[in-house]
Length: 330
View 1: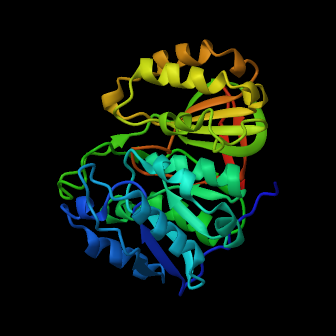
View 2 (view 1 turned 60 degrees about the vertical axis):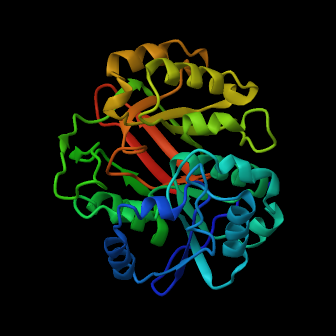
């Protein structure tokens, strides 16, 4: 199947907000919509909302039919240029048997979000051949301060066409910004962790590791052959969880074709250390001779890079000089 890249954003475009995982009603308990609205207005983008984004059930989500309808409406509506997810959660994989892959492929447009949205992104790549974007949610735009790097990566990928080179942010945060916008803790970045030297180019596959693994054994799992894996996990993970989930992924038959691995920064609650991650990587036979880089700005800390799932990247890892991660086609 040929890979389709959706059209880029331009000022004046309409962005549809949908809730394929958790409901907007949960998110707006800590209401930052004024910050969000201002940010999108500065980008020249108009926000519209799916009909069911505020439905809320016992799982802080909504009915499968409601979530599917909002996604289908967003892809089918010719006035919509991009789709942003409200937030992540736990259950976007429930939607996969009901999605119209031909509709999605026939109406290519940007879909951006991360975390649980990985299930949708992997499935859309596998079944529709459409590039989607692991990047900020609609709710992420409510971060009032220290949002500049996240925004610059988002605009470079969503509005631009040239290669985008990611570089370590000077500082990062792992705080509950949505509870207190005035009390933010910035942590000095020690830089990326080069773990295995080498260079590779390939198609990006990945997102949240635990969520990606939900697709194993289903018709929705994207191929790993020729892939640059970009993986992350959240605070609910631990070193042993990450280790066994990575092992499971890399034991898939086509994992022998993985060309490189970049791992996102871990939240403090995971207890992950550089030494533990080195040991985890060392146990993976599929990573022999493969460049591995860790600590990149992907995942559940901020700033957050925007990465094209299905796009192409170049990964260069050096123990002596600077390492590079370039998004070649997005």
